[in-house]
Image (cartoon, rainbow over all chains, first blue to last red):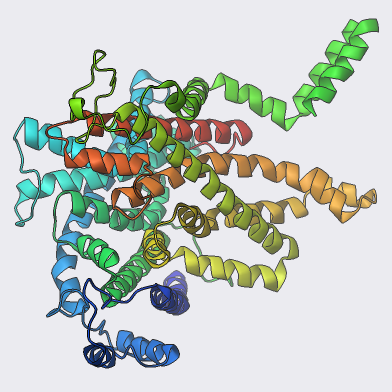
Length: 314
Length: 310
C-alpha cells in the first residue's frame, strides 16, 4: 500500500515538473531577448548584407513568438543550438565538455559536506552547551558567513602560494587540483548540515525511545548509530535540495577562481559576452538538473521517513 | 506601547508602589515584545554582534568623511604600499595608490545599502503577496502559492545574473533584481502565519466582540506577523549582501568608480600575491558583517520564537 502511494506521489511530482520547466524556458527566452544589443554588435559594424545573412542563419529575423516556439521545439528535442561566441561549438557540446568537470567537483563536495557535516553536528549535539559545542558551532557560523569567493583566494594564498603544497588552479582530473575547489565549495554546506544535524540530534536524543535504548544498556555509540542517526538525518536530507542549488551556484565562482573549465565558467563567459544560446542553454540545463535532483531528494525523503503516508488524499 | 506601560506604572507608583510593581510585572509578562527583548539581551553572541554592527554602520557612514583621502584619489608616491602609520594609509594602498581603508568603507556603504534596500523590496513584495494569499485563502491561495512553488524551483542566482546581463549593471537594477527574486521565502512565511492567525481564538474573540476586519488586521494580525517578518529581514540582509558581492565579484555588479565589498575582494584577489592587504581588509569587513547579521538574526529568532530553535 505504502509503495503504491510513494509511486503515485512520484508520478504526480513528475507531472508537476512540467510547468516549472516551461516557466523556466519562457522566462529565460524572453528575458534574454529583451536585452539591448545582440550577439553581433561587436567593435566593428558589419555590412548590412552580412548582418542580414547572419540574422537569417540564426532565425533572428523572424517574429519573436515564432522564434520562441522554434526554440521550445528545439529544447524538447534536446538541442540547444549553436553557441554564438564559440563559433565551431554547439551549446550541447559545450555542456558535454563542461558538465562532467562541474559535476565531479559538486558531487565530491556534497559527499564531503554530508559526511563531515553530520559527524560534526552529532559531536556538538552529544556535548551540548559545552566548550566543544560552542566552538564548533561558532566555526560553523563562520563557515556560513565567509563567502566562498573570500575563502578561495585565501586558501590559494596560504596553501598554494606560501606553502606550495598544492597547485593554485587549473584542471587535469588529478586529485591535487581537486582538493582546494572541493573544500571551498563544501565549506558552507558542511556548516549548514552541521547546524541542522545538531538541532535535530538534540531533539531526537530527548525522545523516549532513546531513553529506552540507553536504559537497556546499549553503549552510547550504538544508541547513536542504530537509533538516533536516521531520524536526526531527515532534516539534512530535505536540505539537500537547496544544498544542490547552492553548490551549483557556488561552482560558478569557484570555477572562475581556480580556472576550472566547467559549465560555470562557460556561463559567466557567455553572460559577459551576451552569448544568448549558451546562457539560455546553461540556465535551462541547470534548471532541469536542480528540478530533477530535488525530485530524487524528495523521493529519498519519503522512502527514509516511515511517518510519511502518501496513500491519503493530499 | 512600551512608553505607555512605563507612564502608567509611573503614575501609579506615586500613591501605591506595591500596585505599581504588580502592574508592571503583570504587563511585562504578557507583552511579546518586552519578553523577546529580554531574551535577546541574554543572548551574548547577538548583543556583541549588535554592538559591532552599530560600530560598523557608524564607521561606514562617517568614516570616509574623517579620513584625509578620497576614494578615487591616487597617491602615486605610495602605490601598492603595505599598511603603515607613516604614509597615513593604515590599510595600505592598491596598485594605483588608492587608499584601501577609504575604499573599504565606501564599498561598505554600497554593500549595506544594497542589503537594506533589496531586503525592503523583497519585504514589500513578499508581505503583500503572502498576506493576500493567506487572507483570501481557497483557490486564490492555491494558485498564488503554486506560482511561488514553480518559481522556487528555478536556479535563483542564474536569474539574477540574467537580469543583470539584460538590464545592464546599474545600481538601482541590482536592488530590484535581487529583491524581485528574493521575496519567495517571505511570501511563504507571511502566508502561513496569516493563515494560522486567521483562525486563532483571540482573533475569533475579537470578531465576536464586533471588532471590524481592519482593526483585527491592525491590532492582532500585523503585530503577530511583525516578529516573524523582523527575524526574516535580519536573516535576509546578509543573504542579499552576499548575492551583491557575488555579482560584483564576477564583474556583473556595481561598476567603477563605485565599489562594493565584493568588487574590492575581486580586485584584491587579482594582486593578492604582491599585495595581500588589498584582499584581506575588504574580505574581513564583509565577513564580520555577515557573521554579525547571522548571529543577530539567530538571536532574534530564538527570542521571538523560542519553540523553533535550530
